[in-house]
Image 1 (tube, one colour):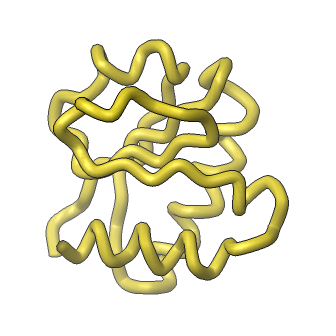
Image 2 (cartoon, helix red, strand yellow):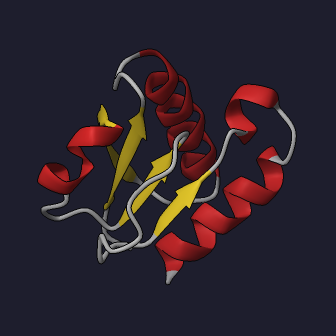
Length: 94
């Protein structure tokens, strides 16, 4: 499977998206999926979509982005983390 590009978005594009990007990258590696993690502010998502396979965000996103997206706080709260990872894996395996 070729490397998938995942865009991680949060309010500031710094702290929260870094935590989520690190957690997802590590978990996907364990599941045999290599990802190229990119980060941005939620307001920048539209301009960062080129070549992106999936968006993972901790904040609401516009609905019409044309790229699958998952909005989750599971990596911050710890609740529902496995389900979120399963969803991400399913999207990436497509």
